[in-house]
Amino acid sequence: MEIHLLRNATMRLRYAQHTLLADPDFAPRHARDSFTGRSRNPMVDLPLPKEAIVEGIEAVLVTHLHADHFDAEAQQLLPKDIPIFCQPVDAERIQSYGFHNVIPVDQVVEWQGMRITLVAGQHGFGADLASMGQVSGFVLSAPHEPTLYWVGDSVWYADVATTIEQFQPSVIVTHSSGAIWEAGTPIVMDAQQTITLCQTATASTVVAVHLDSLDHGQVSRADLRIAANAAGISETQLLIPNDGAVLVFEGESTPS
Image (tube, rainbow, N blue to C red; front, side, top):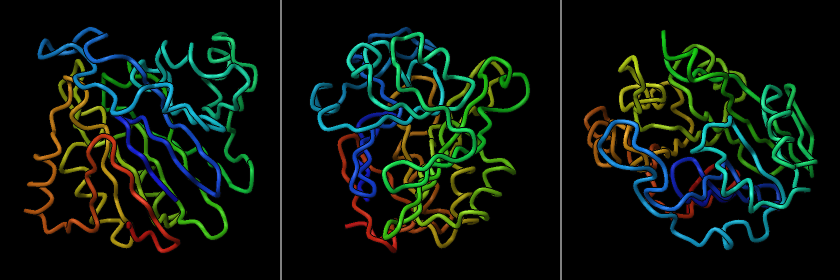
């Protein structure tokens, strides 16, 4: 398995000999408004031209439809017949963008030798939940591949712990910027929540993404590493890749 982090949650995944694109956001740097007044968004450019990112892509995974996870540029560039796996609540809207191979994942879908399981997420706490809407994560599994749990835009809460217990993933991808919204509390994992996940999933390699990309993020890569070190989380258990980094995992989730 390969995880090629592009920016924020956008990743190219090589899994079971197939290439998937996760949460495509192709907007140029500063193309969208600021959330907090600190900077226009995204705060950084993509590390590759968007045409290179989509080259060879066989399917797309979309956790939810916020602009930083499936933006207008991606909607225009992606082939309209490409398989798009999504949560059922988003299927009709994605079809309205002109895509005609939209596959809502109602629990589990088998595709090209892999199993794609939709799992629950919680995009914040309290008052923010209504404005954030429904979100999901995905678990990928296949013979001779490490099981991958992509948490998506979720805070740490009971269902994340349940998913870890149920699937025993070798690799977990977290969104760890501690981004805030109107209530001023995290709408994705912050440093402490990411550390709690690491302490819970001690047999898993955790890959923290969704960092240093949007101006409502409260946790930087450097912040997360300092907090993890202080909590005794090793650099081999918690990986914090830069944009453009490629992580390769064998069956036992050992990065090379």
